[in-house]
Amino acid sequence: MRASSAEAAEVVLALLRERRPTLGDGRLVCIDGPAGSGKTTLAARLAALAHAPVVHMDDLYDGWDGLPRVADQLGTLLEPLARREPGRYRRYDWHAGAFAETVTVPPAPLLVLEGVGSGSAACSPLMTALVWVEAPPDLRLRRGLERDGPEVEPHWHRWTAAEAAHFAADRTRERADVLVDGTGEPPARHTR
Image (spheres, one colour):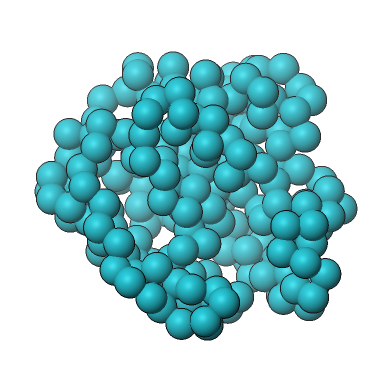
């Protein structure tokens, strides 16, 4: 299914209601796609509609080069939830440049996991739905620099190269249940 960002939260929620739980007694939706595409906005809309907690991948990476190492954090978060136990992760403090406190995530009817790498193939057995959000590179860069400041531009370019390699290896977009245009333009259509 393909959806505009305006309708995507309702489309995703309807899809989740049709599917059986995959994360213990709960459901897991992973909202993935390149940086600056609109994932956080969609996650907030979906969480508000479903009264669901959101975990942001930005809290799990250990800095700008942390994408390849985030799998361990996903394991301590998702594997216990699959056993109907609280999951946990260490929150990264971007200002301090170090991990801070451990965050506990109790089991819930729906967990929204948002950010680059949330739809990693290794997590597929636990996902109820995978959502891919995309937008043109120039728009994504503009959004990122507006959000994080112009001083992060060198990091941004390094990050986008790392995420592109990750997405290609994991075939994340190809595995998605819903494709979302982060610019909010096209109407919904089925992809599979």
